[in-house]
Length: 188
Image: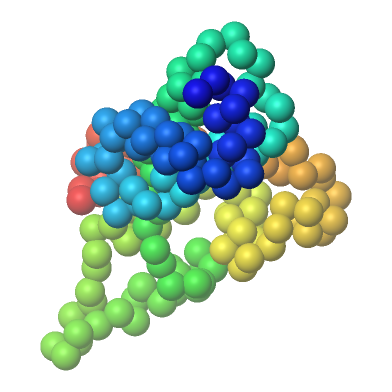
């Protein structure tokens, strides 16, 4: 089959064209299967959605074969998913402000009345104390479920600038965490 026929058939739902494209996409994504484990089916669905979007938008220009084009789309979609999973390492906490968190820390006890401290919680509290008020305020808004648009309206700062500020706060928090770990002030 020619590329144009396969594209037309795939978009129309022709079983033979769909089977051909499915085979190519699964072959392209198969090398990522082990790394994506639980996300495999979701990623494969994302690949199909991306391929459909690109083909419907006439993004395939024919500079390579359709198989090569789809291989690249599948590989990039899988890599994007892997990278997105490595990007953020969140530590879940109770939804409290840093001030409430510090005050509540004194109340954490077990049956013997001894305070319970988690090394991760202790490290996080130390990082929060060293972060600026603006970072804590932005994080609290995000934790409370505010969109960047709502945050922009509240603060009078553009959405793009807020995204940059939050990213800078995250980077600063990681630097502070690494400093604390290097100094031995907190260990996990």
